[in-house]
Image (cartoon, rainbow, N blue to C red; front, side, top):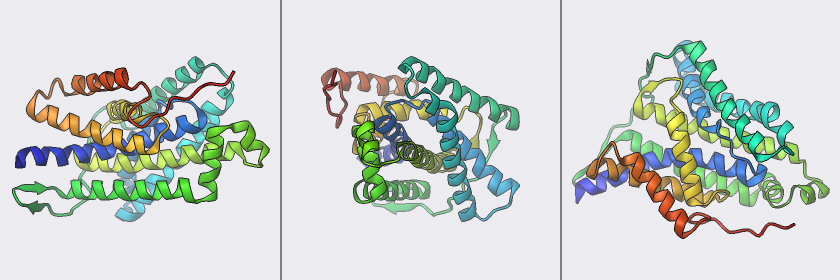
Length: 292
């Protein structure tokens, strides 16, 4: 029983990282109606930015974290302006190909700068583990869960209680009507990319602290799994992204522990297929009728 509970907590830790990344996917889709497949590689950029800040620039930890978030936020805005804004009226296939191309571009640039050899990176989280009953919870798990909870609460407050959040919800419903009401659609979409990229930067920091290794393809698989989490929870739903990430992490952890580490990814994707067969819009997604 204690072993199952420990694996469940480990799953919540991984799921928290997936949830943070999935929020970027679901926010961009909800507002710009596109899937930013380069979003997973923002994690990798965040990991390298943290490494450069601490090892190269000798920044204090807090300053390095802020530096990482700012770098990723600016990168998200630049990607939106350069790659996606000119394609807003283009076919979906063109946007999809551009997003995949941007993903490979970020990986290739990282490969040219840092080469393919993994870089060992000591975790910046030094919190001691906590023992409760028969289970031991690591410091990285406690910090990851706490940071994720704070991010979720802050984002929910921002979306529901601020003027900028109201503008984002309005643009999500109808861009043309929002523009007629005086909302700057371009600025709102750029803000969405910035917030999503900032959350991906936080996820990258948590990820590299957990695995303590950085390489150019670091964000590829977590990015795909986070996309699965967003679809599982209901793409476009912020609570759905959070729940989807947590569910995905728990399934993955339990699968690795009690079934097979080699089959864990297949099980995760299999669960996604089963959920979508029963509820195509995802756990918290809503079926929308398209107006013609």
